[in-house]
Amino acid sequence: MDVVVDGKRAHAAIGSREANSDDPVVVLVHGNGLDRTIWQLQTRHIANRARRALAVDLPGHGQSEGQALVTIEEMADWVIRFMDASGVGTATLVGHSMGAFVTLEAAARHPDRVDKLCLMGIAETMPVHPELLAAAERNELLAPELIVFWGLGQKAQTGGHPAPGLWVHGASKILLANARSGVLYIGLSACNAYQGAAAAAALVKCPTLLVLGRDDKMAPAKKAGPLAHAIAGSETVVIDQCGHMMLIERPNQVHRALMPFLP
Image: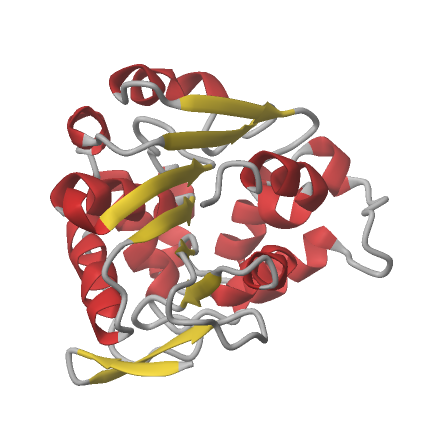
C-alpha cells in the first residue's frame, strides 16, 4: 500500500489482506536500517485475524521515499501523519528497537491517536558504541556486521530456526547492508542522542506491553525496567534465549506475547 506523506510516497505492507473499514488498526514500526519486511512473520497473521495491519517503511527506508529523519521526535510525528494519510484515526502502535522509541514518543505526544502500545527490544537509553557509529558514518560493511554480532542472541547465532531455510544471521546482515547510504548512521545517531524515553513513558496512558529479549545486548532487558515502572499498568514479557532481533529470532514466542494483547 502506498500513500503520500509530506509530498513523498510512503509504503506499508498490509499482510496480503484488504481490511474492512471497521477493523481495528495495528501500525508496526521497524528499527534502524530495517524496513517493513522485518515484520513478515507477524504481519500476515495480524491481518488475517480481522485487523488492519500496516507495517510501514519509515522515510528513506524500504520503498518509502524521502530522506531518513534525524530525530526520534520527527519520526514519531511522521508516523501520525502517515496514519492521517492512511485514513486511520486511532491505532495500536507496535515498535521494535528504534521503532519502539518512535512509537513510545508518538504515544506521549499524541495520546488521542494511540489505543494500545507495544514496545519491543527497548531500553531507557540505547547508547551506540563509537566504533559502530564510525563504521556506519563511513558506510562500511563492518557496521551491519557489528549490529548482527551484538544484536543476535547465542541461539540465533548457531542456527536451528523453526522456519526451514531461514538463516537469521545472514538475513539480518543482508537487510542491514541493503539500507541506503547514510541511513544506518542517521538512525544510530538518533538512538544514541535520544534521552526522552523516561519522560515520554511518564505521559503514556494507554495499555502498554513491553516484549524484551533476555539475551539482548543492544537493549538489555533490565534497562527497560524504568520505562515499565513509569507506565502505569504496563505488562512485560521477557523471551528466553532471545537477543535484539526477536522478530525473526523467536517469532513463535513473539507471536504468543503479542497476539493476546492486540485489540
